[in-house]
Length: 197
Ligand SMILES: [Zn+2]
Ligand SMILES: [Zn+2]
Image 1 (cartoon, rainbow, N blue to C red):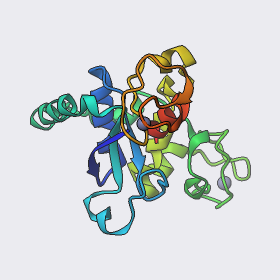
Image 2: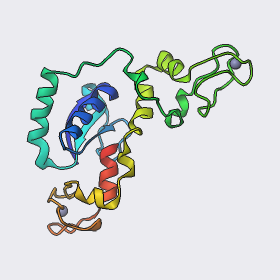
Image 3: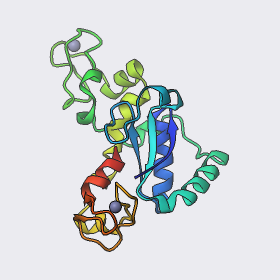
């Protein structure tokens, strides 16, 4: 896994990861503030805590070119783009689960739209979260809309990955094994899940 850049906003990082994936590069976003994998803490945080990573350093040059192209010609993001896909609120961080705006009863993510069980007031949970915590709080509810987490072993074997210790390419090797170059034990699924953040 190779870090390409840092971003202040998880949405900004996700859009770039999506752009790379659309161009055939397996990319993902890691929240550096919670990542034990990359050990990014403190000082570097000012650059943005969201790390854009790719599966193999072999794609680094092409990724940088694609990102240059992305910055020059960013996709036009429609006002209200959030409405196109329904967020999966079950994935919402517990800290961001809102209360009923009328009676302050804690809402349940299995009921994204009102009426409130306690006071029958109408509500739209995604809107409440957006207003109170901003788009980043909802970002985690959209990522799952992509079937990345459901990749089969065969599909994961198709993704170019590097040895986590010495970055030797693991092409053609099985799902789990030891790096032929340095002997480090690897699990492709684990490496892949790390990329997804
Ligand atoms: Zn209520
Ligand atoms: Zn190795």
